[in-house]
Image (cartoon, rainbow, N blue to C red; front, side):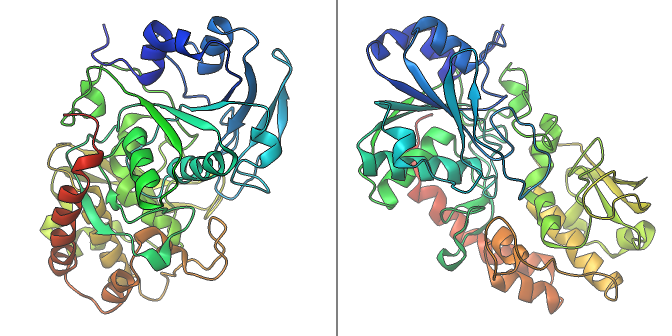
Amino acid sequence: MNNVLTGLDFLREYRWKELKGYKLGLLANQASLDSNLNTAREIISRLLPGQLKVLFGPQHGYAGQEQDNMIETYHSEDRTLDIPIYSLYSETREPLHHMLEIIDILLIDLQDVGTRVYTFASTMLNCLRAASRYGKKVIILDRPNPLGGEYLEGNLLRPELYSFVGSYSFPMRHGLTMGEMARIFNHVFELGCNLEIIPMHGWTREMLWNNTGLRWFMPSTNMPIPETAFVYPGQVIWEGTNISEGRGTCRPFEIFGAPFFCPEVLIKELEPEATIGCCLQEYSFRPVFNKWQGELCHGFMIHVLDRNAFQPYLTSIGLLRAVMKIHEQDFEWKDPPYEYEFKKKPIDLIMGDVSIRNELESGTALSIIKEKWLEDLKSFDDWRKPFLIYS
């Protein structure tokens, strides 16, 4: 029996009758399932026949069909319901007027992974902006943060680096649910959106994914298992470099490396704080797509041994620091574009603070880099409290 009812489960059991008579839109994807593995689309169209007028899909597509970043998806149609499916990762990343004019309420049911750069939060923000502009109500069907709601990690995103991979000054591991982020967005950007959250029941902030009793549904194609989400707040930084983050393997983000890696030398260079709660297994792989496609890469697979002690962002920054020192001649920062930003360095957009790249380039100790974000984390933790939904 599940410990947690998601917002979709609660809608299905208790709240669906409140939507009778309204024309509905739904932003969802392949992970928008209830505890019985029924899709949000199926549940809404069955309980409220004829009321679902339009579907929207985030990055990777409504069906989750696209693997890589910067691969746009096309608009299509749901042939069974005879309604349009609009991609919000296409020529537009915000619903346009003609997409919303046929509905009264937009339901959003997306599974976030607890990391600032995951683009579903930006897609939700764009929907809140559009809904406010065109006078539509938004209902968020909330889901767990798989990394829990207590643990925060990393520097706060600086406003000059706001982008599609960072829509507000959250830390890298933000400890918020989609519903809580929606409340923050509505407040800080003064959207005035008619916003309602259908909360989860049974979820508390200390819960990591394995405590929820819920089945893991891949929210994107390179997030195959919960372990991926646990390393992602750190391992995503490799997207801003010429190091493979494991795309094109069976375990993206847990596996990483490059043809020029010397794993045994890198291990010796790591500061002890970088390996707390995890084990780095030397690992070789040959990506079938993305960086170093078809080439033999040497590197590591991260095994998380203690989810409460593991600090994914700190670990990956420590690894990056070692790589930059040991492989100075081969290591490179990736050039733009990255997620619709064509001038700023991808690594700066991902890390959210240019000073971190500068400190890494100057060889600053990992402990000093971490120390600089601790005070901001404490301030953020206090600031977010009025927006929290769960105890």
